[in-house]
Length: 232
Image 1 (cartoon, rainbow, N blue to C red):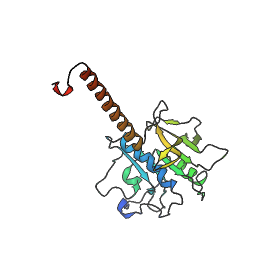
Image 2: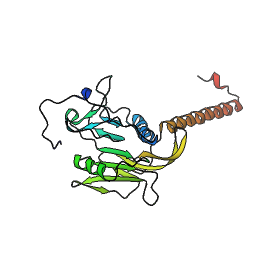
Image 3: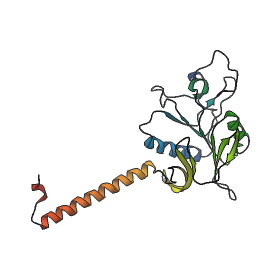
């Protein structure tokens, strides 16, 4: 997996910075990955073999600064190390390369379509996702898949990623009280997975419908001269 001659004595994750310490310059760089992770926390609540990092350094060589995407997803790793959680993602400790990396383009362009694309391609990340809501003539969302060592832009929307078991796409919705275009996960049929808030609302509606149905049945029994509380 690693294409480098690594030194024998390697630093641990606790000895390395958790990010490049560069502050985000757009709140969306936190909220968009945060929504994706929030959905996964419910969708994969019983799985312990995945990790979704946000603004966390990915170390691939101890003498090279980490790559710090806005978010990344790895499968086949421990979800938690211990109660202190991961300070960074160190490839020589994890032995698993992220399958999915996300960059949210901010007003201050940071070479997401050029240098970063080349870095993730060289590293071997299978899916590189770029999102920019400011684009006018091109799609806001680009999904690049590594094919024979080169990224190929995927044309469908949402894009199904069989190696991950999820699709990725964007549409308008509400999150954190903001109605705008957001990134979401999708199933293999292109159906969007609900956000935590939507799931709570859905369960509340089901509970209300059930209560209404119970009330209707009680009224029907009373019309027949049967008191519901007398039924064992």
